[in-house]
Image 1 (cartoon, rainbow, N blue to C red):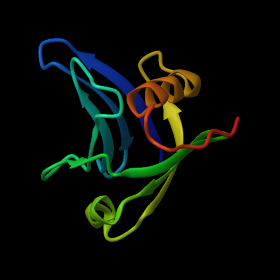
Image 2 (cartoon, rainbow, N blue to C red):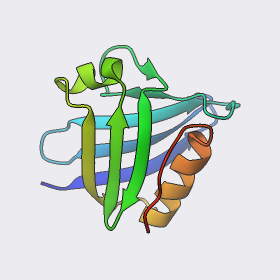
Image 3 (spheres, rainbow, N blue to C red):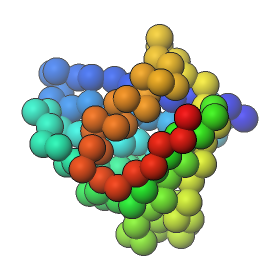
Image 4 (cartoon, helix red, strand yellow):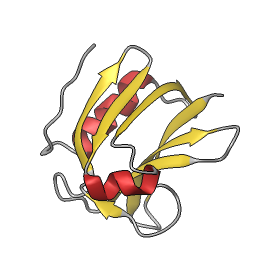
Length: 116
């Protein structure tokens, strides 16, 4: 199983998104912002259902991936699992560094830890 991560910016839809996609099951975790973005104004989604605003309590970069701690409401989208960890394979010219930079910018008012 590989988790593919990518960043996309859609001027026509007025949004940007970081998507973590399980390439075997099609399951996903999305962090999305409307454009123009207000600092820290983001939503998360599992690709179906209504997104949850500011559902990430903390996040950190790990060696080859990312770890997220979710609010109770956001965790409900993932069967009550409040902690998500993804070892990732960047796609579309992205790198783990560039994804981390997008996450930092998109959630800059949120509490977070970064571990290089």
